[in-house]
Length: 339
Image 1 (cartoon, rainbow, N blue to C red):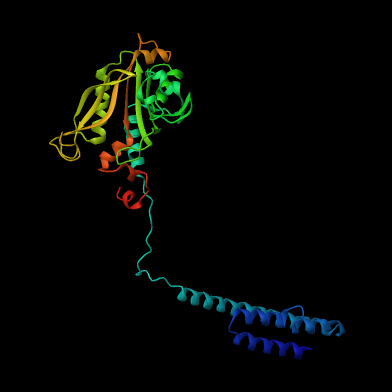
Image 2: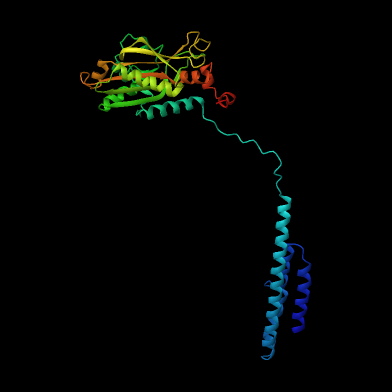
């Protein structure tokens, strides 16, 4: 038996040293040390040995097993290193090759302006107020002192779901909701989408965006309104921009005005952007009508306020010199990527 054990050791050593793959090495482990391996097969005959022979044969068999296991472990480690080196060599990266183009997302110019407007007014102490896009006729018109025969109430101008329910034509309805549910002092802006029955062309869209502002408190005057809007204009368009207030009429404000700014393209000289006048209209404003305050449960003898509203789409077109409002909604990446 001893000769057979030594013969297995010699044979295993030669075969393991000459193995060239991990699979071949695993096959040799099974061949010599597996449950049906050669060494296992010899050890099954240990019971036939005499008591004197068993200790010696046990020692020899353990030495043979240990030797084969050590050989397998060493060769396996060598083959694994070789396999890793070959893999690294075959998968080498050429860092001189041009990288693949990475498409980076970009914020839509309309959303950029929305964010900038909100940041300016939040910095001036305003809070953001929101309301539903599907609105009651009461909040959209009646509470805003709009006459029953006002053109904006007609079905050719406003989308109606029912006689008393419509898509809001302006975010002024949010101001009504705010005054109905909050006691003065009030200082909010209401940004959001609005809807009107307009034909889609270069300057009109049935869906557009507005940002309106409302301030209600004791002793609020037209001077406060002019100061607030002048500060906004300088922060948004630049410190060299001037404002001009022109008398106007809105049912929900009295007195009312429209605000022009010096053309930021030509500096007030006159150009294509401003139509040669040197001025550009940007928003409407005025002092909140006393009847609107009373309708919302606010004492107009004690409190006064001002309101203003601007089309964010128009502001965006002016800021980025976009000639057609449809470009804002077509999702043409060639246009959006410019900003």
